Amino acid sequence: MRQFGLALTAMNLVQQQVSSTRYGAVANTSPEDLPANDEEALSRGIGICGNQVSAFLNIATRVGLQARSLEFYWPDEADVRHSHIAAEVKISGKWAFFDVTWGTYFRRDPTASGQASLLEILSFDEAKALPDRAAHAVTNESELSFRLQLINSLDPFDYFTKADGYLRGKSGNITLAAPRSNGGAWVYSPDGVPNHIGVSADYSTSHVGNASVGLRAAAHVVHGRIDEIGRGCVGSNVLVAAVNGREAVNEIVSPGTEKDFDLPDGVAAGDTITLSIRPKSDGATCVLVYKQIILSDRSS
Image (cartoon, rainbow, N blue to C red; front, side, top):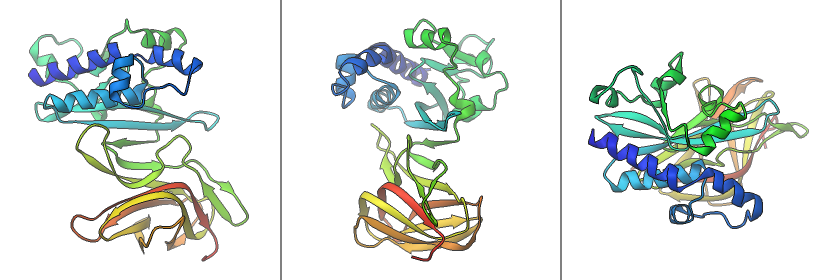
């Protein structure tokens, strides 16, 4: 009960103090003057889901809760990418899902009352599996942003069904959108999704996740290149390209603007290539931040 009470209090505080409605008003008038951190979001009372979850995780960890983010990404009918961020908190030894933006959690038995119902808060995976998810939601329906979603016939929880990838605590795989063709090469851009492979910290928590990237091959390809923006590596690491259980292991060499990598043999159109970073020794970590990834039907 104490853990649930702390998580619920943190969610209510952030939803009340960090308004996405006010954020929209500020963004439309002075977009250069948006909050850069949790303190600014809380003190100025504005923020969107990323600001809200970052502040929520900061508060949750400070009061002794174990918490992590969940980032969702999906395309619409015009292939424009959308995203949303929520959180999970460990309560009574299991993860419980909180959508801070909408002030929502999900109960296993929506008709139950008392302490038993409060301790049956569902994780994201459990809520996602429900055939009638809305009936299990406990939501602050008076919050203006939530009411505007309903007034405009929008589903605040559409990420449950639309997300084609998500990161849990910064770990997971994100598939990039279909590439553009460039004469025997196919260029993948991280439009609307994280542009890194490897380790990164989970917002305000001490947890560090490891993200991989999926690329659906548009043709037979044999070679790849990452156009780097930057990197942060400690120790010895390798970049692994995996397809259908086959791997090509590439050494991560000295920093540069381009990183060439080999693919496993026999990559065909429709295959999904997963790029990930693997440490070669204890304590080794690495992140590659990129502008684009290029696959080619040529060896170099």
